[in-house]
View (cartoon, rainbow, N blue to C red):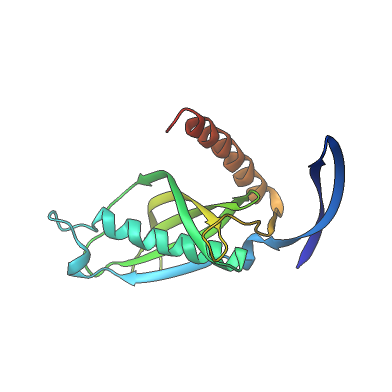
Length: 178
């Protein structure tokens, strides 16, 4: 694990004082999570396809595991951002969810979950992509600082930059009372 030095400003009677603290840093791969589910009849909607609510529960669970592994503490789901259904899945399909961090703030983490339908030969077809905002919490459910994220490679850099744009839009929506 790498560590980064973070300068924190504390205001004390008008003075600005810097305190140096170490922030643990972790790689995207450190919390990468893959889960598989066999699609059973109880998980289908009336049309015979994977029920969206069931998929949402699986995605939330996977995002929670990714965030918990990164933060090394309990986490809560704060928001679902950009959940997109591309295709359906039928009974007896194997559903594979892959979760990875895309961005880390002070206490918040954006987790991207890609969901695939896996064929018997192992080929995967993407059926869903979703972004979840998770927050690390203490024993009183208050937000606490989580480890920073080490960005490696062009793909992670592109995803992180897109995540930062989504974070700015999310903050604007919150200010507007969304």
